Structures are given as structure tokens and as C-alpha cells.
Image (cartoon, rainbow, N blue to C red; front, side, top):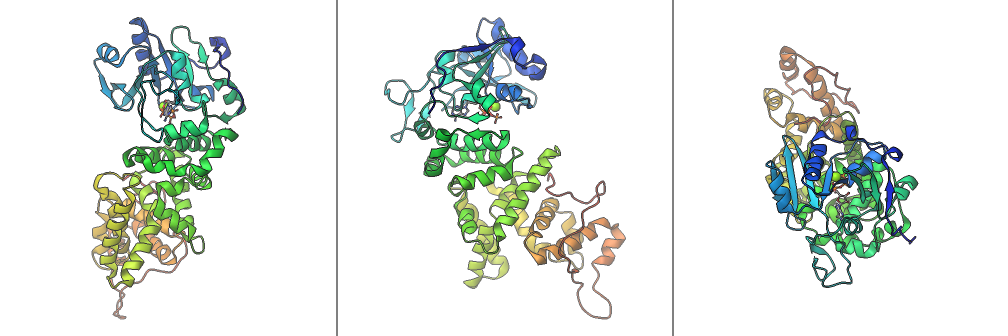
Amino acid sequence: MEALTPSLTVIPRPEHPISRANISPNAVSVLYRLHHAGHRACLVGGGVRDLLLGREPKDFDIVTDARPEQIHHLFRNCRLIGRRFRLAHVRFGQEIIEVATFRASSDGDNEDDGVERAKDGRILSDNVYGSIEEDAWRRDFTINALYYDIANFTVLDYVGGIADLKAGLIRLIGDPVQRYHEDPVRMLRAVRFAAKLGLRLDPATEAPLHHLGHLLAQIPPARLSDEVLKLFLGGSALQTFELLRHYRLFGWLFPATERCLNHQQQHYPKTLLIHALADIDRRLTEGKPVNPAFLSAALMWEPLREQQRRLQEQGLDEHEALQEAIDLVIQAQISHVALPRRCNTLREIWEMQPRLAQITGKRPLRLLTHPRFRAAYDFLVLRTETDEQAASLADWWTRFLQLDDAGRVAMTQPVKGKGKKSKPRRRRKPRPVASGDSAPSPVSDI
Ligand code: ATP
Ligand code: MG
């Protein structure tokens, strides 16, 4: 690994593009409140990185030499959170500004550094405060360890982050294997930043990813759940998925899905998932919301189908097998990555799939009023990519949604004279839903 710059590089205001005008006014006010109270206060992390890259930051993280209790004292709208990392959350309506205290860098060789570690080297709590320089060295990637100092608007670089940013490189600070052992979530973060920012992983940062996936098994499912949402709802879900599979990390998050992907026939499960992820990315690009339940429904659809098939082979009817399979699949998954409590929306999206096949009489009109109808319809449209029967059904529903009430009633009547129930027309793809009418759009924000 190339030696990192050990000394401080200071980039004066005229030589970098970061302006207070691009920082959230709430973050600027927190920086100034700390500064005027005599503390050091800097913007750090993604806020600095993204502004230097000319991107809009997702959030603004602040770091200071004020202790959490001192921060708490300065802001009325402030809450202290976290055990592993004690942090202050300063709330302004919907916006939360995270304020951390400079922490000492954790040197894995020093058992007396005050950092609480598990036997495997994992850091359990990291609340030892230190200098800004020490704080820089304990951050994950060099490009995440740049500081914008509100005192004089300079950017401070202790770890060679500016050079890496210019070279388009994601590089772990320190020894990559040790840093991944300390916190295996850094592997997911490496993938996330590579996909989202379109940067390359430095070879020494990249190499261990291929064989350290098993470390993720030690991470609490609730923390992995947060990371999974960031991985797949950050606008680059498809690219992230491909990278996670490439580094054999995906299977440690979704083992049942990984097994299906490995045994896939005719690229079936991969196609559905890839279309779902592409839909999610498209929707986020358009500034529309995405329900995490839709993501989960797509991620685990194939394990669900396989489980249902197995149960049907054991003699359960289709409905019982589906109910039982939903329970089994969710139960198995939550020991790896937590899902929202009770997963009601996820269950409903799945449970409504067979109900969407009942298209005569009053049932379709009743289904329309179901609070999860849109999500279930979106999922049906997604299934059309890989399932011919779903395609004709989705087509039926798409036409049904375009009609007024009278048209809908007529469409659900049995065909006269033939004594048969109406059947969906066989078409491979549903016609696109006209925008601006009451019909749902793909991946709606239920
Ligand atoms: P974004 O907010 O765009 O997802 P970010 O880099 O700001 O990216 P955060 O999770 O907000 O990510 O974390 C803020 C900063 O805290 C990071 O930039 C990094 O310096 C540090 N950090 C976060 N997680 C870790 C970690 N697991 N190990 C070391 N440092 C971390
Ligand atoms: Mg951030």
C-alpha cells in the first residue's frame, strides 16, 4: 500500500469550491453556535466529500472538540444518542444535524487505548475523545476524513483524502484487513461509495472484500438493516447489487436469495430482482419515494416462491403454502438483516399476488380500495418481466384502471351466454399506464 501523507495539508478557501451557501443553513448555524462558544467546529464526512465532488450531500455531519454533554448544553433541540458512538442529534423540524466529538484513533495493537473490542478485533465502543488529527485517522476512507473548518473556511486533510478524491480512489485509512475486522460494515460502505460515487476501490482496500464477507455475520441484524436500506435506496441499487455479488458479500446479507441466484434457471430470479432495482433507481432519480417493503418483496420473492413450491409438494394447498412460506422466509431472513417490525406491508404485497388473479365479480373493485393495492399492483407489473401469466394479469389490471367506474363494472361481468368467467387477455407486456390519471405508477409510494 502506498504510504499515506502523514502531515496536514491545508487548502485555503480560494482553492476549494465549498461555500456556506451549499451547506444546509441549519448545519451552518450549528457550526457557528459551537464556534462562538469557543469550540472547534468542522463539517466532515460525506458533506465535505460530496461538495468537493460537486454533488449534493445527503446529510451534513459536524465534528467538534466539545464533549457530548457540552453540545447538549448549547442546543435546546438536542438529544444524545448511541452507545457504540455517543453522538448529539440537533433537530430542526425534519432535519437532524449529527454532531460528534473528536475521537482518538484506535490502534489495534494497543490494548490500553480505551477502545472496547471483541475477541475478534471488532470495536464495540469507541468513545475515547482525542484531537482532530486522531479523529481523522480513525475514520474509514481517506475521502471521508476531510474537514471544512468554520473558523477560516479551509479544508484540512491529514490522510491524503484530497489526492485520492482527485484520483477517484476509495482507500481505507490504515491496514485494510484490520480495519474491516474492527468494523465489517466498512466493507458494505466501500461498496456503497464505489457504486454511488462511481469511484474505484484502491487495490489494497478491494482485495480483502472477496474473502471477508463472513465477518458480516457478527453484525447485529438491526445495524445491517440500516446499511441495506442505504445500499439499495441510495440511487445506485443495481450497481451496488452487482458489486455485492462480485465480492461475495450479498450472500451474507440475503443467504436464501443468494442460494436461489446460484441455482437459477433461465436467469429467472436475477431478472426480476434486476428489474426491481432498476425501477427503484429510476424512481429515485425522478425524486419519487420508494417503499422499503417493495425492495424486500423483490429481494426475497424467489426464496418465497421456492419455499411455497416445496410446501405444496408436501401437500399444502396454494394459499396455506403461501402463508406458511411467508412466515418461514421472513423468519429465516431476520436473523441476518432485520426487517421493519411485523413486516405488514411486505406480507400484504406478497399475499395480494394470488388475489390479483381474481378478476371477476366484485372482487377487483374491492381490491382497488385495499391500502396496499398500488404496491401489490406495482409488484405484479414487476413480475411480468419473468412470468407470462403475471403479464396477462397485469395487462388486465392496467386496462381496468384506465376505465371509469361503469367500465370497470362491465369488465368484471362474466361473459354472457357462454357461462364462463372472463379471462385475462394473453399479452406479454402490460401497456404503460397513462400519467396523470388515477392509475398507479410503478413502485408507488404506498
Ligand atoms: P453518506 O452520509 O453520504 O451516506 P457519509 O460518509 O457521510 O456518507 P455517514 O454514515 O454519514 O457517511 O458517516 C459520516 C462519517 O463518519 C463518514 O464520512 C466517516 O468519516 C465516518 N464513519 C461513518 N461510519 C464509519 C465507520 N464504520 N468507520 C469509520 N468511520 C466511519
Ligand atoms: Mg453523512
